[in-house]
Image (cartoon, rainbow over all chains, first blue to last red; front, side, top):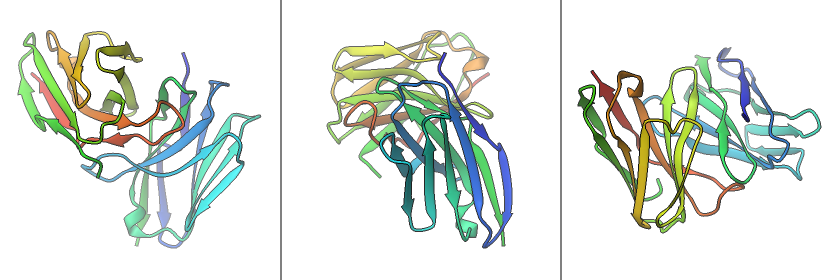
Length: 110
Length: 113
């Protein structure tokens, strides 16, 4: 079946450093790639998304890149802050079902 | 947060008993989803609905059934709960299918003993 692989599963960075999370998808029909952030005990919430007609998108300290040929997309967080500590999920959507990655637990050390 | 609630928020039940979880939305979104969240697996789709009385299976649908008799309510039923169904269950909604943000409910923590 279709799947999304996400790496790393855990990431620890020093405050102010950058964090990068990478995902690979298998469904060639996927054209929408959202990223969700889930704080401890809370619901997942969308932080940024990208569509297949765009290679990069940025929103303040967060950016996402997409390489459709290689079926890779990545989340970049710059100048990390303690409040960035959470679990991040990537996902791919081909129009019928959203497939989520297994998640990356990000720790930002003050 | 979008107008989406889940009930109950916590439940402990015994193996073999039936359990129904409710998702209620006030956004009038057409699409509703049930996911389960387990460590190391992210969010896995159980069932989804694309309209009243219109539902389809997700990737982990065995042991679960759903019903949607009204736009605002989407019910998930475990006919005979098993310990492997201990999980956190999230409901989500979206206006369109694919190419659209999903809004998640607060989650239901279910423990099957």
